[in-house]
Each structure stands twice: as structure tokens, then as C-alpha cells.
Length: 508
Image (cartoon, rainbow, N blue to C red):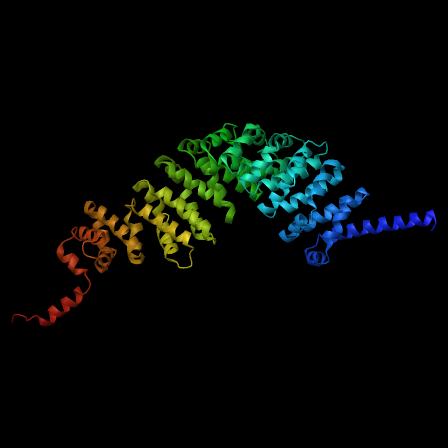
């Protein structure tokens, strides 16, 4: 065979390898092909091509492996079991920027599925190499490395600690200062994943100076970057008062309130989540939010969205109201109760209705004035209905019952209580009747209305155990009226009167 023929054979072989990896990479983009590729044993065919002498074949085979591993955990596990990771880690340190991006993509695709697979990435020494890639001159390599580190860190505190220990945090903080928007997004997302597991991990992110740089990007026009920035600040704020105060000290208010009107739903949701995480810690932090106009802004936000986007805002109002009478009144004055009542009626998801019920309970539990503000919004019958509905989730039933009790124990606005006399089960009824027994002895107008509305008649129809609190309340109410009035409205009294008519002998 001549030299020319030998070269032709090698050329054909290279073309065949190139065509193979390119075709597999293309096929792996479509879910319907994945199972066929898996059954054909494509993983074992791609592995030796990671060591190919031709750089484009190496890169394309890595890309194909990443796409396959990204699809499901079985394929990701096949990458681990196929002993592919050590080769990727080696190449990540030695090869060109195109290969580094492809190798980091494979590591990210494996790590995303579970903590066990992410641990396999850590165990093969990938984290240190990925951290080195954060210092690469190419922004795309930095981005790919940051993405992989974020996917490793998101699973649990131990994996996050491994990323921290490798020195990733200061480099990620440098990455959010780079000009490339895509790199900023991924670095902010990785910092969010690192911060979420524990106060210690969040403190590490704070110590690296992340808060100031994140706070500066709240008004960046890029919606995806804003999402990640707000998420990272939320994850830092949630752990402790000190961390929340450090975020507030970065002067995020009132700037962050503009994000509640953002056209991007996730920006709105993440902004509300950040405000919620700050508000929940102390009355002082809640008061700061109130002073900045945060309560009114969150109420407007809830009115302009639906579903899960509403959830953090709904909960934020409950956290603010829970702290004190004054803060609960701030929610009432800002017209928070009607908006929460709308959420309670409109939303289809039980967990959102449960959050609205909880928040209404926090608002109404302070004083009769607070309870009245909730009661006049016609919330009590709705809460009762949700509590009694067998289709309601257990959590919704518990939250609705607790909210009802919280509000009822303070409510002296009798017109709002009266409908409950007819519908409430005994465990709720005793609270309703208890409130009537507190008000009626001291209010003659209310006593008259109670008779004309049919309330007194309904009280006589309630059967209560002798000596029970409910019976005591009924006795207190009955003692507010002349005996003949009480008898008149007692069950069977009309029959007694008719019998007396029958047996009455007129005097002739």
C-alpha cells in the first residue's frame, strides 16, 4: 500500500470519527433519540474519543456526553460508572478553552441530578480544577465552571462546603464584577446556591464582599441577572437578623421595590421573597420596610399577579403583621386585607390559600379593631368553608381553623359573626358564641338586633353539654333577655302554646 493510500485511510478514519461524534451530539438534542442511543451503548463508544488526537473530536464527544448526561440520572450515572470523570478532570486542566467548556458542561450535567452524583464529581477532584477555571482568561470557560460549581453546591451544605474549601467564593465574587452579562448571571446564581444551606456558608459569601456588588445590580436592565441577584440576597438574608441587616445596610431600599413592578414575573417573585426574608426577622426590620413604602408596594404586586408569584408577598404581609399591633395596622391601612381576601377566593392552589389564611389570622389576632377589619372583608365564612371542605388539604384546614380562632377570639363585630352561628361546627361555634356572650351584656342595640335577626332563636337550638364552656356562654346570652323572650324562641315553644290553647277553658 502506498503512502498516499495510507494517508487516505487515516483521513477517512478521521472523517468517520468526526461525523460520528457530530451526529451523536446532534441526535442527543432530541429526547426521542436518547433511549435508542443509550441502548446502542453510545457511552462506551464516546469515552475513547475524549482522548482523540483531534481537538474538535474531543470537544464534540464531550458535548455529546454532556447532552446525554443532562437528560436523566441513569445516563449521568453511566458517565460516572464508565470511568469518564477522571479523563474529563485531567483534560479540564490541560486542554484548550473549547474543550474546557465542554468538559465543564459534562460535569454540570452529571452534578445536577442528585447529591450522590454531585459527590462523585467532588470525589474525582473536579472542584479544584473547576475553581482554577474561574481564573481563565476566557469568559465562557469561567461561566461553564461557575455553572458546574453552582450545580454541585445546590444539593446540600456538605457539597457547598467542598466548593467553599476549594476557594471558589472570592473568584465568584470577581466574576459578578466582569462585564459579560451571562457570566454575571451564572456567578450570582452560584453564590445563591452556596448561601442557601446555612448561616456559616452565607457568612462566607458575605465576607468575600458579595453583598455590595449584588446590591449594585438590582437595577440592571437584564431580567435574568436581576432574578439571580435578588435570589442570592434572599438566600443570605433568610438565615439571621445580622445577615438581613447587612443586606439592608447595602441600601437596597427603596430601590428593590421597583422590582415588584417588573414585567418579568420571576423578578417580581424574587423581589417579594427578599422583602419577606428581611421582614420575618424583627419588628424593626419590618418597620423599616413599612417606612420605605414596602407594604403598599407588595400589596400592589399581589394585585398584579396570580399563582405562585403571589405567594412570597402574601407571606410577607403575614410576617409583618405578626410582629405587633402597629405593624398589623400598617397592613390594614394599606388595604392589605381586601387583597388577601381576593387571594383566598381566587386562587386554586391550596398552599396559596393556606398562606392567605395564615396572613389574615396574623392581622386579625391583635385587637377587636384588627379583627373587625378582617371580618368586614367577609373573610370568616370563607375561612370556615375552607376548614370544613373535605377537599381542602390538611395544611389548609389547619391554617384556616387557626386563623378563624385567632380572629374570632378578638372579634366583637357581631354582624360578621352571626352567619357563623348557622354553619360552624361545635369546636368553632364555641368561639363565636363566646364573643356574643362578651358583647351582648353591654350593648342594648346589639341585643335588639340579635333578636330580630334570628340570632337568639339560633342560640336556643344549640345543644351543649351541661357545664361546658359553650353552655356557659349560652346561659350568659340568655341572661341578657327576659325569661319569656328566651322561652318564646326556644324549640317547641310554639307547640307548647298550641297545646295551652287546646286545653284552655274560656270563662263564659
